[in-house]
Length: 318
Ligand code: 13P
View 1: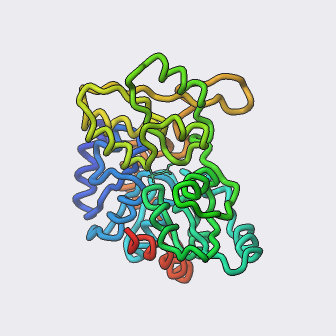
View 2: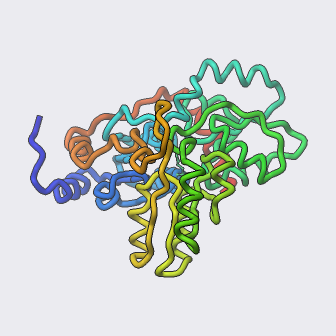
View 3: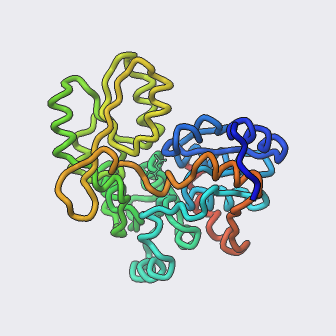
């Protein structure tokens, strides 16, 4: 195995050029990965970038379902994920065969699936959505048509409240967002009067109601961009996003909301809010991935064909 160079970032830039590769990074990636990426975005922005890219190679710095989505939209490109084991609790909560049985138990329903799902589950769906467009996707379906929403029950509950629609929910959740502590956030709000609270809709309703802004990572970043220079924000999502928030508002103060400690121990901690899957990618693994053109996302062409339709329907809604 080649030894990584001292200046990883410089060598990543060189390799990227020689391979005609593009590096896409989610806002939850380590800051040093965001700094070498060609494009940083939320799930929807990254899916659009993957679809529009003219590069030969897409290196996806995110989690497995995101890289899979890129492969489905660009099947002829080489799609790399620096750490192939970077998963997602939401995607893993919905195994294909169980989801197929669930759909079969609800005949006549349209199936709306959060992109945080496997290609197999996408292939069983009518529409995909992200946290940016979930409300718009559900609103695009006629009111008298019943809807299954999967796999995130908290995002589903958010969409149901926003649209006034009754949704059949799959019982999945994001292991990070479900554990943000309403009690700790309220204490932070009391200690920081005037601070604005920014909440991702994957959080439970008890946390969402504390938010001044509830939205996807892009929506939360946009709220900071359009806010005053020296504001204070309580950030209730994975703290990787704070790197870009600091970029757009260097004079503002960003406070990370803590999450409950996992495994039943009482209390909340600030390092419990970091996604262990997203953070599996490192600058060194990114360099290794470009050097070896691996690990590659591979999907059967027939599965790609079936999984592409609901994603394209989502992209057409906007
Ligand atoms: P976004 O739609 O904000 O990118 O959400 C991504 C995600 O998976 C949050 O856990």
